[in-house]
Length: 114
Length: 109
View 1 (cartoon, rainbow over the protein chains, first blue to last red):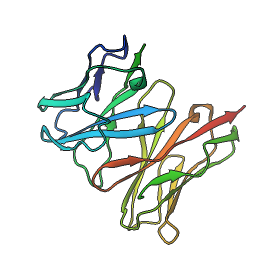
View 2: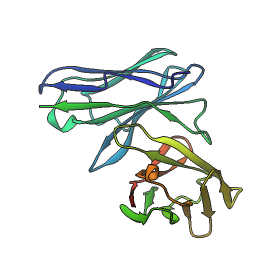
View 3: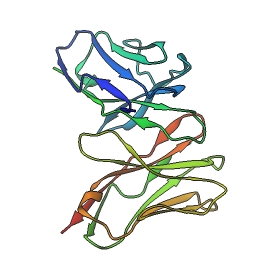
View 4: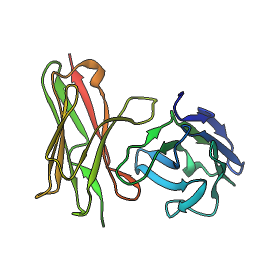
C-alpha cells in the first residue's frame, strides 16, 4: 500500500481565494482525520470521519473551513475564502479504528496564503 | 482541560548516548498512548504504543514506560543515532488522537 496520499504537497494562494486539499486514505481504513500543524498551536485535529460520515468537527476553526468524504477513498478539506492565518501544514491521517489504534499520516500539504 | 503534553521543547544528546523524552497527561481515563516521530518535511510516523494495562513496552532501540500513578510516560531511545533527529510527540487515543506539543531531539556528533 502506498500509504496516505495527499495533494498538493505545496500550495501558495492569494488571500480570498478558495483552496482545496485532497487526501486518499489507506484502503480498508474506516477512519480519516484532518490535522493542522503550526509552530504556535502544534498538531490540531480539525475533523474526523468514520465510514465517510463526519463524526467530530469541533476542531474546525470557522465556517470558512469545510470537509467532505464522498467515498471511502477520497476526502477534501476546503478553505473559502482563505486568509494568511490559515497558512500551515495540513495533514490527513487514516486508521482502521479510533480507540486504541494508531493513525497513519500522509506527507502533508504546506499551505501559504499571501 | 484534558490534555497531553511534553516537558521539554528541545533536547540535545550526544551521539551514542541514550535519550529520554518525557510526556505527561491529565486524564486518568486515558488508556492508550502512542509515540510518533516527525522528521523535517514529513508527516508523523508511528514509533511505539502502549496500553494502560502495561508499564513498559520495548521495541527496536526504543522503550516506552508508563506510570499511571503520576500520569507520566517516557520514550527511551538507546544508543542515539543521527537519524533519530526529529520532533517526537506523545499522543493519546480515546475517541480521537490528541497530540502533545512535541520535543525536538538534536543529536550532537
